[in-house]
Amino acid sequence: MKKAILLLAIAITGVIAVHAQGGGGFRRTPEERLKMVKEKLTDLKLNSDQTTKSDSAFIEYFRAQNKLFEEMRAGGGAPDREAIREKMMKLAGERDEKLKKIFTEDQFKKWKDEIEPTTRPQRGGGGNRGGGGNN
Image (cartoon, rainbow, N blue to C red; front, side, top):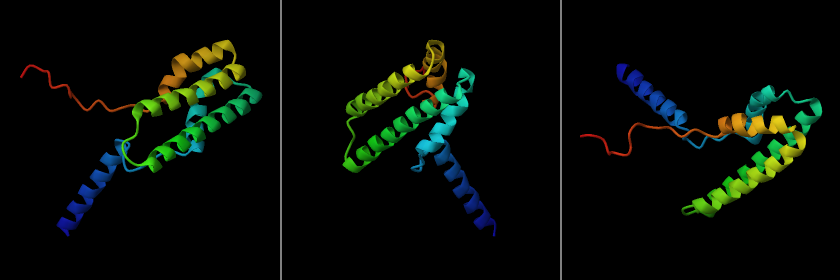
């Protein structure tokens, strides 16, 4: 019985560790991502028209991103990081052009300077990987 509990505890710890690092194939849906962004946009005090239009711009952006990720996975082999980066930048640029037409100048500035950076996935530091310390 003790062995079973120990194995279960180890398995749960492993699942939690993988999930915390963003592994395990877990990816949010465009609708879940929209909900997260909308929570961050409350500071912009959007009116109902702005909210509707920005929701549309974001959901379109998130769906295009998902399509790009699916194409990348279906392609097999090592992805061309530079090509993917360029496509992602293009998608973000198209989204921002739409948002410029929806938001006021101040709202857009706040989006770019304060809110957008918080929407990007954070990469874990994981300690000193450089190895150039004083050993």
